[in-house]
Image (tube, rainbow, N blue to C red; front, side, top):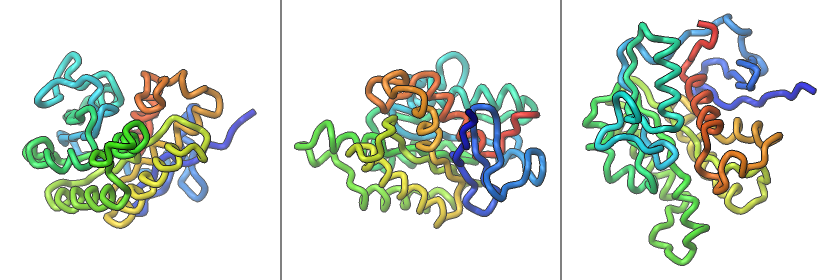
Length: 257
């Protein structure tokens, strides 16, 4: 039985949306068919892409700057993005830098934004943050000083966007996700609220946008969450590829190149 794939990402500045299914790219309703009207990779040749976030981004990357050979980019979705770009676009010489730090909230990103992001002079910046902003409310309910509530989350993330956009060629905002198909689950419902805030900011400031929850929802139609990781937050290699695929699709990656 063939399932209809919902769109996992879109270019909110008005480019056609595409839905990513595991059988390949599938045009979303109203989008151009494969190969028609596509503008190609958003990142120009020799662009420097800095990807920042929490442990999902970090994935064991090198310090102080996650760039280079071996495990420098970690073992998660950032490494897979680098591998896909390097294999399919070797002539573009795109640099990928991993600046994720485990345990970070958007509050932590703000504190290190200048040194860990802007001082690296990136052409593009991608941000995926929110897992810990939500998680601490559930695993440490009494330690309220560690909680980043929705209003602070959205306000702080917007500050980072406004600070960065004038200095770069583009940004990619990625929603947080929770590997739980039950949308009534308390942590899943809260994570969705934070994801909605990311979507609002992407639309408001015309950045690229990745709905990371949508492709996980597709996987979870056939996989139990613990098969991707017991804590439902840190993806295994399959989950990391789900993220990498959604990301490269959002930046105009051509799977037929």
